[in-house]
Picture 1: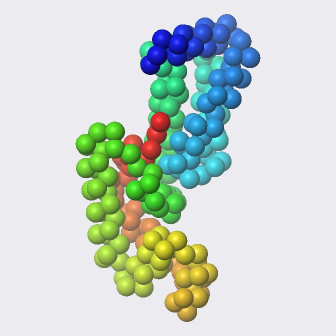
Picture 2: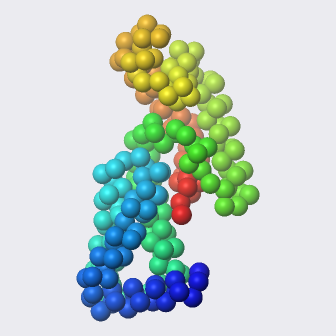
Picture 3: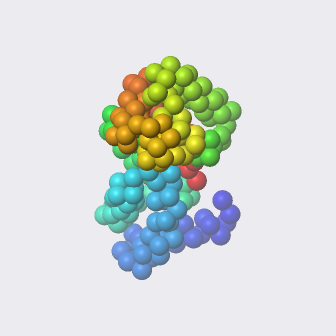
Amino acid sequence: MTHSNLENDTWFVLQLKQGDRHAFNRLFNLYWKPLFLSAFNVLRDKKICEEIIQDIFIGIWKNRQNLEIKVSLEKYLYSCVRYQVFNQFRKNQQNLRAELFENLEERCTYDNPESEVLYKELVQKVDSIVDKLPEKCRLVYKMSREEQLSHKEISNRLNISPKTVENHITKALFVLRASLGGFLSWLPFLILFH
């Protein structure tokens, strides 16, 4: 962190402690979008992500007089997002959306060798689980995820109903969730955060 950023962070914290709404609005406008995008990159749920970011800023305003930030303001805010995303992830493990398993390679980052190893383990585990799915279910899942085909395109190509396509994808996701177990608890930490 540069000296200038440290001064800026100190100024923001001081202004917040004094109840300066203008400083709070500047902080909100500066960080809302990147924080939202980092949460959305993991959860893929606009409404939940908006609520997370809103709750973080409400919490900062409510607790402004006791605000003590030991790292940069930016790191502090991203840590808040990580914590809230992880809580959402844990609470809703049974309702994980299909999008969570899409484009993992593009969404993951390796800040250290352990992250890269965990990511490779996750990909191998997902591939192994998908390979064990019943043939039609595996085919539908791969067409959806790898070829990015819509339910309608898959149903036309395989001559099955869109509802059957949806059922196969639902079954594949159920098997993935059930089989991945402990892997799911650390997946959010692999997904790109600032």
